[in-house]
Length: 387
Image (cartoon, rainbow, N blue to C red; front, side, top):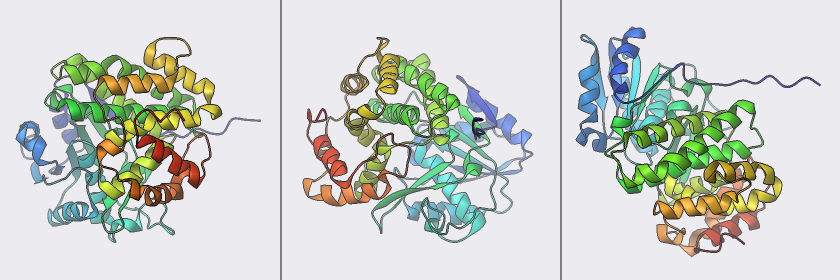
């Protein structure tokens, strides 16, 4: 029997290294742009990165800036960005400068501004989903190392009215170009560095054990895991370590490319339910949930987890869940959902919300509603994730 045809969707161009921000000028010129729509946030602006970006744009190129993106962006913020994009006449290129929230807002705002409707028309699971017919080239410049949105076809949002975190998916949402400049990440605080780094690790590990994994995503995911193991502790402890920052940016990109072409699993299903209820930082919930879910999944893919354990520790057949616990402790992540403010009374509703999607992604083991609730209960108290 012949092997199925493998289709991969990746950015057309990647620039990686200190000073890569300057390559925005080449990209804008390559695309023949005369009007760019720049999306960012206030933290990035205060750090001076937005000013640096605008300074490298070619002479004669006009920029319209929307810099009001919030963490875990809602449909409201996306709508505001879409309205700003519609009001800016003649935009021919999108530029996102920020973390995953900024990059995802850019993608979602463009979907709305160019195709009409409301965001839920396009969300994953919409039946029927409204087609996306118009897109613009997108230059993505991450300032955190975690979401990998610069490499993915996903665009996440929170709908407060439904207490739902969901995403839009379309292969044309993969940015045209990703610019990975570690100099833009040195000012990221240790706590944010830790959380976003765990997000990258979760992407890579879930992609590697996904039912939809393939040889290319395996290679991307394993390399990302090794890079996180090598660089994350250093990036948290010493933010000015450019080698560590560059390593984490590359890990985030590779992990994003891996899961965008394979799928994530149960960790993300649970995290998205928590994000919809509480708008908690995605990396922090992933950091609490990753080891418990790995322990749950282990009977279904022991050999793959053994390879991940080796990738994290350098020791043959090391326990991958233990390795994740050790890394999370070393970088100071919360140990339980309770530390993040998750209330026991909300666990049944959270479990029900997560279960709706739990068996639709690439998780290697099917899960029941009772098991979902049990995982959330174990993750709510430190030390119980081995059950």
